[in-house]
Structure formats: structure tokens, C-alpha cells
Image 1 (cartoon, chains in turn yellow, purple):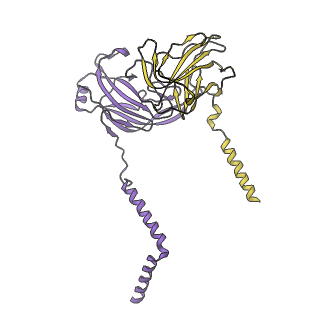
Image 2 (cartoon, each protein chain N blue to C red):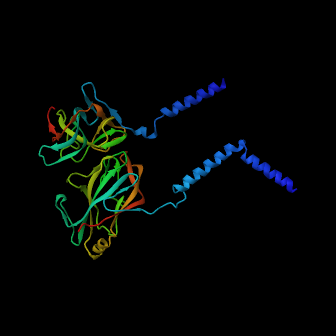
Image 3 (cartoon, each protein chain N blue to C red):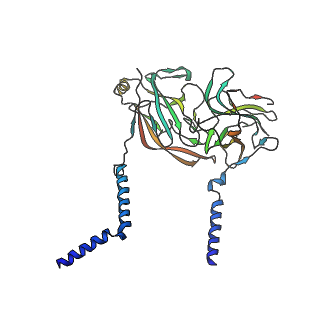
Length: 181
Length: 219
């Protein structure tokens, strides 16, 4: 009988140890997912995914710049929920395969850092350059405000499944523009 | 007396080769085999602290990044970057292929989000010239594009040109002639810390010198 009691206590201790969050979790950001209408609203951003594509080549409309690679291009419709002060996507990252990618700085046009408007959507694109062998897996797209990934603040999270994403031969990266997608 | 000794020696030999001692022999053979393997694979060789000498075009691997030198040039101006050498100086342009082996994107100069790579900036950069002393801070850009500050995505190699201002004098020319100008690649250790605005950061801290890459200026 005492043996069963001891084993039971050990099991309880193991469960408590396993479910105790690490110290860093005290300051983790709060993930905000999309509501039923597809729009995720955080403190400074309201965003919806318009389109996701994978491609081997991205181009720009003026044909001066293009790049080959394993690209994931996300088109977003973003606005500012309450104020235009500091309303911009400062950090756009893709967490997949245990690795954290940032939206590429290579395309001349990007939604990162574009000033957003209250009540009017800005439609723009983010391109992520992935390793050539990363072809499948699930991950999440994370958007946060102007400053480095916040602690104890909202982060917009959209799930991404690479297997579900259609592949295009080439994607043209457009400048962010105001208006409906 | 002598007979007794002979008897006990014979007894010892019987015991040593008896069937009961077989596991002992197997264990001894296994230990000797392990030791032979340990020594054979260099277990007794002295630990090496000398950095690897890497020829142009070959890759130097550290724990968080790889670097290989693709091209070395001396120039006075780089028009695409609006970069011009000061009087008495010239620009040493080194094009390297960098790959980030860590699991977070890092910037070559500035931090991408919260990771400071300190690859070429700061007091103790990971990539440093030896044989010639730069006179100012290094600048970097993607080799074939003139865009914003370069971000190295994990697992995606990037060709980056780094420009160091160096003195334009006889000593520099002699150093290049003798082939003593090298790019020192230091190992990096990730270290997490806090900055005042409550954000936690990860910085790459410099560890031991891992490799020295030859820099030969193309004639």
C-alpha cells in the first residue's frame, strides 16, 4: 500500500514539473488569432491574410529586380484599429521548422514599416526567403508593432501550412497600396 | 616448497583458462578494443587551439555561421553605395558568402528583431581583419543588390560585400604582397540578456578564433 502511495506522489510531482511554465513565459507576448471574419486585431494592428503563395522567383513591376529562391509570399490587408501613431508592422516573422525567419529585406517593396491608416485597409506583401530544402511543415506568421517583438503585449498569429500553400512560377511584389484587396 | 609453488602456478593457469573465466576475457578484450579505438581516432592527440587556415573560396565553419571568401578588391569608390574613401585611405571590399546556422534570423550590422550578431560591428566583431588595421567602421550590403541592411535568414546563404576603410600606404601594399592580410573568423556563443525597454535580447559573444581566411587581391 505505501508503495502505491509513493508511486502516486511521484506521478503527481512529474505532472507538476512538466506543466510548470519556464521563467521566460512570465513575459511572453499574447498571441491573437483571427476572428471568424478572418481579421485579427491587436493593440496597434488589425490584419487579415488575403493570399499566400510559394514561388521559385519573385519579381517587381519595374523588372529591375528579381530573385530566385524558395519564397513564401504573403499578401495582407492591414489597418490601424485606433490610432495612426506608431501604426505599422515593425516585425513580421515566420516561425516554422523550429526556426524564426524575418520578412526578407531584399524586395524593393514591402509592407514592413509602411504607415497604416485607421479605417482604411493597406494591402501589401511580405516575402520570406526559406532554405531550399524547406518544402513542408506547419508554422505561424507573427506580426507585431514598430518595436522588437513585445513582451506582455499582443502579437498577431496566423497559422501557415506549407503543404496547403499553392505554388506559382513567379510572383510580382507590388508596392503597398490603400484600398480593398 | 618448489613443488607447492609449481602446483599453485598450474592451478592459477587452470583457473585463468577455465570456462568460468570466459566472461572476464571477453570484458578485457572489449576494454582493449575501446582503448584502441579511442587512441586510433586521436584521443591522445594534443587538443588543437590553432585556427584553421582557409584558402580563398573554401568555407570556414563556426558553431553559429559559415563564411567563405568569394572576392577581394581594393577600390576608392563604390558608386552603388555612395561610398567614397577618405584622402589617404582606400576601401578593402571583401565579398563573402555567409550562412546563418542558428535558428533565428540575424542582421549583419543591425539587429533583426532581437538578435545582435555583431558580425562586423562593435568592439569585438566575429569577422575581423588581421595584417592590416581598418581606419573606420565597416559597411556591408548584398553583393548584387543595393538594398537595406542585410538580414541573414537561418539556413539561407547570402553573398555580402563588406567594405573596410584601410590606409592607402606602402605598409598596406606590402602586407598584400606578402599575403599576410587575413580575415579572422571567430566562433560565436549565443548569450541572452536584458535591455532597458523590457525586451530580452540575444547577442552573439565572441569566443575563440576558429579560422583565418586568406585575402588575395585579384590583380
